Image 1 (tube, rainbow, N blue to C red):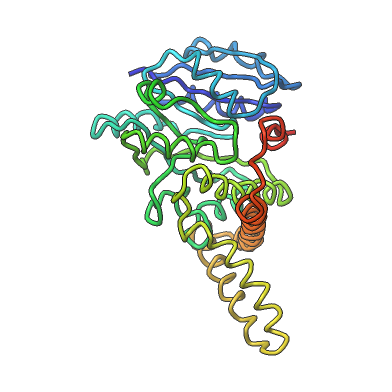
Image 2 (cartoon, rainbow, N blue to C red; image 1 turned 180 degrees about the vertical axis):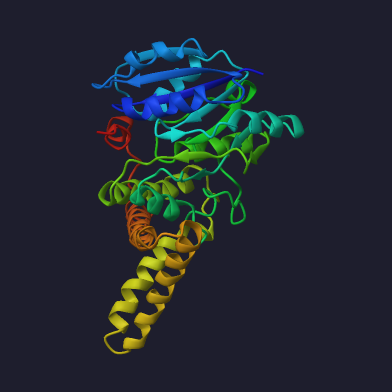
Length: 331
């Protein structure tokens, strides 16, 4: 089976080189690579020559239109039986495709997703953000490979679907939460979706806390959008960050009269600190993980509450494609 890897890129030549190196190191190479440059000023086409002797590469340059349309552009030009989606800041372990082929041989599925992890070479900040995005104690249970709180929905940092799914269900919508929207449509069409825990990637997020807040704020808003488009998709677990944010505010007020209440957020912070310390064995990473978790809860929670107020209570329409480009075009 031929896999078509589709990677949208926007001003990230350094990331692309690391991804190419990890693809060249694969123990098996049953794939073609499609790199779609989404109007980048810093192009990566000059990097590709060395790698073309190891696997097939198709490079496309187009006007900037955002991630969803860029992935769709790649899907229209893919030759494979199965399409894989990675973010440009992903690094694959050498046995990624070996594990994927073994999983597919054991039990074929029409669509899959795998978890993300932090490699030992990542910076302390990258490890902390990765911990916040994957820890059971934050909103990261599903991303970290634990599909226990809701039906699993693959994310496009590590996602695959068959050509039959593409021809039946269609492509990505230009919206917040586009990968979850597609996953819901795939499941509603009767196709199988699996979480392949062994088929993981290293997600090297080049991010600071300000950009992390913006990213998770968009995630929070997306949950309300998805509920509007797919009634019933919003589960109790998705409200947790907003509830925690409101409870935190209430605790601060109540602590003026009952100071001992401040022990509750302290206990929660110690849980995150201890979990990170056990995982990485690094006190600095553990401390940064607490900060990242706080940013995640605040960002996701405020985004969720904002969309809840404006989109569900005030009934404002969802943004048009023109406005969405502000969200999906990374500067």
